Image (cartoon, rainbow, N blue to C red):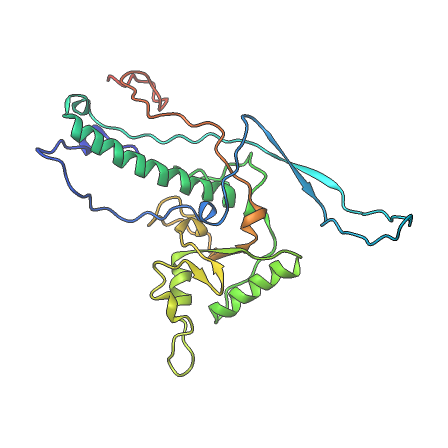
Length: 271
């Protein structure tokens, strides 16, 4: 999240048709798993330690027991906030300009929250500061199931998928860091032919080896694109369809603050 100071927003004489900016990648989790409806507060999710099995039983025959047992996981909600700062001239601008700014804010806010979903669920990282939130205990990077990057990116990818399959799960997707997507896209055979010509340059990758494959810098733990923070992770393979549960418990509309101290700086906004 970045706060825009009053000096950063200039009122144009007419509406600007487009804004030139660096492209910020969005959420891989949102692309690979569905959002679940959630009630407010902690959510108790029922799990099973194994699949249930059927049994053929003759008429009046005895039935045997099934060892599958139900369990539960508690989903703890976390609140995320996005701030957008402008000058008071915004209040007296014409309605068309105001709507243009608010439309852009909505777009940027959605992208910021989607990136926060990845950074929190993967690495328990605070998107604004890049710091780890030590009180969070349920996050993907706590796994020890890892593949070290070797000379052949495609073989590493197959190895990672194989680890998921060996664990009894079906991989449904892979989240790729942009640099790793480019490595896969430019991988070549000894005669110079591309191994994955359908990937182009790896910019708009959506599918690799039959798996859905969104690309985002959140995979390597970067709070903001271009940040120096990089944890070295280049891909995450797994059963995103059933292995991850996420949802929104409560949404709030855009709220304009003209007074107060939302940043806890010890000074009023009017100052």
